[in-house]
Image 1 (tube, rainbow, N blue to C red):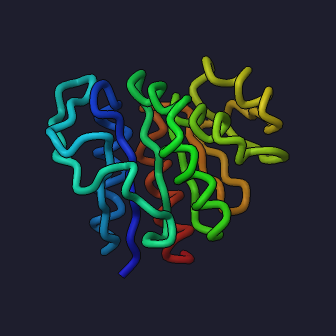
Image 2: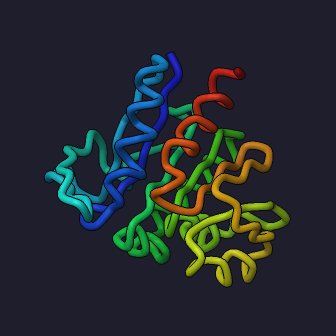
Length: 170
């Protein structure tokens, strides 16, 4: 069984960016584990309550087939988080699928794992993405090898489908 680690902010993650891809992946038989900085209930911008399974700082990419960072303004707390950066680098080093949606694309930029890649993300992160050596396309979903990025809540389902398709080699 494929396993995906979804990383959410403890507060103000985007509900639909987490819930829609999670539902798509689980309905395809993919196990989804949720990580955050606390095991206390996490709260989405629109009120979703999620009980994280593991702590971000204890997570290792080698234990999963994909690492997925979920957006929302709370995800910006990870722009300077060494554990989030280490996890993104670990995913690249272990040749795992690495994905981010909306503002969470800035985490990958700050982790310095996007040089030479095509990617999208929340428009506010476009400058940061370019600054760290990637080409910002502005598409709803962008796939570049083992990197999947999406631009925001409206692309959440397509983002989930892209991750599923790659993991299941559809």
